[in-house]
Amino acid sequence: MTSTPDPLYRYAGIATLLAGLGIALWGLGDIPLLSLNEARRAVPIQEMLASGDWLLPRLNGQLYITKPPLFYWLGAAVAALSGGAGEWAVRLPSALAALAVLWGVYRVALDLFGRWPALFAVQILLANAGFATFARRAEIEMLLTALCSLSLLAALGYVAQNRSRRWLWLSYGLLGLALLTKGPVALLFVTLPLLGYALFRRDARAWQALRCVEGWALLLAVGASWYGAVVADLGLDAWLGVIRGDMLGKMQGGEGVSEPFYYYLFWLLGDFAPFACLLFIGPANRLRHWLRQPATALLLCAFVLPLLMFSLFGDKHAKYLLPAYPALALLLGQQLGGLTEGGARRWLKIGGVLLPLGWCAYFAAGEARLYDYRYAALPEIAEFLRGHPGVPVYGYGELDMRVVYYRGGPIPFLAPTEAAAKLAEGAPLLLLAERENIAAAARLPGARLLRQFQPYLKRGKSAAVFGVAAKDQAALAR
Image 1 (cartoon, rainbow, N blue to C red):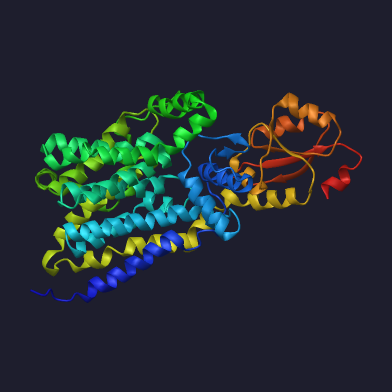
Image 2 (tube, rainbow, N blue to C red; image 1 turned 90 degrees about the vertical axis):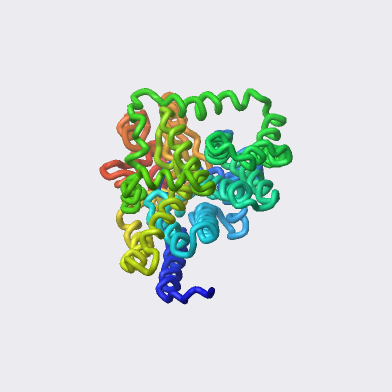
């Protein structure tokens, strides 16, 4: 029987598509880098492009293998094609990854639940503060989200939809790329849910997926390739610091970390507002309904098990759970679709697209004004430094990596004694100091304030450039 055409669905779909494209792409390169983490991804891309060394990422001239290089490779490829590692180039991989997630979520929800639940699932993601924001940031979380969620959905196609084994190979290949994005943590978003589902449902196809020898071989061939190349070049010792500082450190948490076990629940309620309210409508019946169906049971495992695992870690950040968001969006989309069956509650069908359109308007017109204090000084500092070509530039102590990015090259960081020795030489130089270091830099013998910038990255904070008190200082200050 042919279904009755639904003009409202067509209009809502077009509006949702435009909102998604607007959120991901509108003015992507118009705003300077907004966070330290963006700079930590943009600077290695910049230096990779300048040096031609695509194997070993570097941050401000120093070896930086804390994170695998797939995001850097993609950003550098875009930068090479576009003529430079500008904001648009370093953010585009995240934007395209977000669009890939939305496409995958829509296609899977359409097959499993129907048209309106599929559209609702996409709208729930677009209205999600965390998802919408990281779709526009030069950070690795959205790329990891795309690879992990698409890997899981491919595995779901094999396990719950009885699709061919090629879907399983696709799942392992994408998971291998996820390992090249953020390392073994990707397994918590794909392999762990599959294992939990297999144990709970005693599903034969889930066990087959977990025991797929050729799949694991593909994963290792893709995901372990770079790690092997680094070991061959630098030896095993290169990873000891990464394991201690990045992996174990985040699991244990630093000093003063006091977030409770349920900390992530607050972030989830905020990011998924107002759709999170659906979880409180008949929760027991809804849970039983999800557990009875293979696809929704696997999606539930894909959300709950990473949530529980990351809640055990000492270091908690909302972005760590982003790869689990598509699974919850699919479940909520199915539930919201059930509330609109039979053409009822037309206001829900209209209202679902309003929040994504609101986020689109915010990124188009509001974000730049709201966060101008974060970036206003960066172009001014870069212009000032360019006005003194050939003069060495140093940092007094460490600098925010956004300054390094807009400098366009590494800036050596000097300890107080090193900075004093450089100034004592009497040769022209520029010494950058930020925030609390400004007063100490001003007390160095021979230091002279050339320019101060405020606000600098935060309201009420400033940065300053000092120079030597040499005979040509007046010329240098111009």
